[in-house]
Length: 340
Image (cartoon, rainbow, N blue to C red; front, side):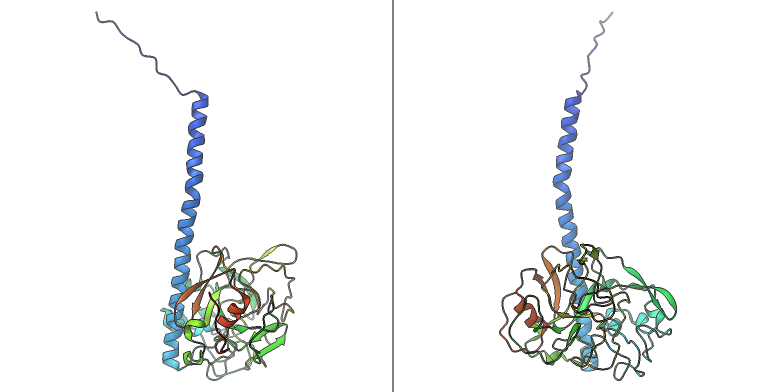
């Protein structure tokens, strides 16, 4: 009869098991940052593609209308037919050129198209336009605001049109072009850029060169208020991507809130610790409703994506000199451009 042999199976000791777990934890810890970097790189590329699509749309609008859209407008000619209430932003006017003609067709530019005109409400209430959203942003897509029709959900965009630069009150201060097209009532509203209140700038009007002039950039990360709290404030304020201008003038005469456009006054991703000026013209140009000088900012590491007048997208770093940023925001200052 064959002799049975028994083999003793050796189990892991507790120490060996803990070592294996520790090794796996280290490997996961090494892997996660790499995954996050890949994810952010993809998000940054998507953001750049959004801006390229916006650039194509702005050029197509210029070709069709012999001018660019207004940064924000009241519904007076040639932007509408009945001034006297808040009109629409540049993001509304380029909808047909980003394959959103069905949304554009819901707007009625007969007075209050961007806020109080109930006929336009189907164009923006509970409407999401993905081209206007950066995937890196931590913002909630929809905010709530009160209009004549009650509480409604509207999308807060992640991009702002560049109205120009506040050379006199920039922080840090700069010397250079004497901007005479700047209103000085709380929000610094410039007409030196491309997309400002009731603007009618053409591509040929960028005499500094389209590749040297910003049209659109990012405002989609939290900024810090005077209490240290994070605030999701940007040029749309609480009223959404469609909100336009409150009067028919241009800077320096325009003194209303400049929705969905910004005048450069602070460096990129500047964290100033501002007090909320509320409505309507905060002295520092930064508030919840609405700051016309909220700095360009993003959740991308080290800077913001910016759309130039030639349709290219450049990444502007946090270290960009204020003078260069001002020159990029001004279409016709005639000054030599620094490195960027």
